[in-house]
Amino acid sequence: MKKSNLGRVSSRSFNAAVLITMMGMTTGFSAHAQDRPAAPSTKAKQGERLNVDSIRQKYWAKGEDSQMNVVQNRLYTKSGRLNLSLFGGGYSDDPFLASKLLGASLGYNFTETWGLNLMYWKVTSNKSSAADAFFETAKFEAVTNPVKSFMGGEITASLLYGKLSLVGRAIIYYDMLVSAGGGLIDTQTGKYFAPVIGIGQLIYLNKTVGLKFDYRVLNHSESLPTGTKRTVWTNAVTLGAQFLF
Image (tube, rainbow, N blue to C red):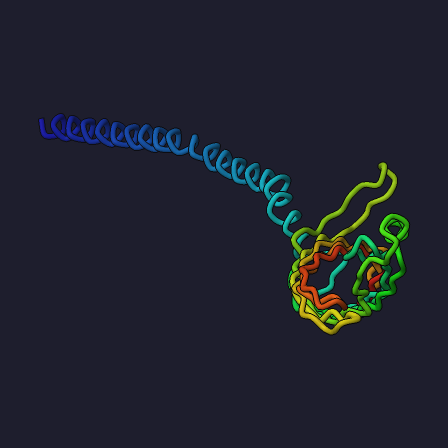
């Protein structure tokens, strides 16, 4: 009986051990089976990150970095540089005079946007065809006050910098500027202060030389040789070359 009972106990112990072992294997297998799908999820996340990074590099970088570099890393720069301009053009302040000017300006560019110029113009005047027609009709000369020169200064602001395609064969780099300042107009009857505003465009030929076009408007009050007071509006159109140092 004792042996029978011992055999039953041993059999039960063996069965329990087998059952526990099978349960452990089943649990381990289930846990392993549950853990395995997590690996593709990690890879998927890594794949998504790689895709986002590639998209950012391909598109966003171009929009943020490349376009900013167009402004920040200019091909032609003028910040911290001196500029010397030589120019000539037309000077119109009186219909009875045909005037021309030759001038020069020296300036400094504090930044790519702001600059300061000092300028001087020499003006030469002759009778216009309107003056000849007036004399033939009225039989006396029109009263004029020819300008001799202008000397002053202006603050410049570069509002636009970019490039243009020239009939698809060449790229032109340019600056569009506006200016405001003032100076003294020297005339036959005296010197008068005149405020001046302008707009211009600089086309770069290389990093040192550019073509400069300017249109300026001046306004001043003066006395004619007869003593009559008048207000004069002047239009000055110039074309020249600018040198950067």
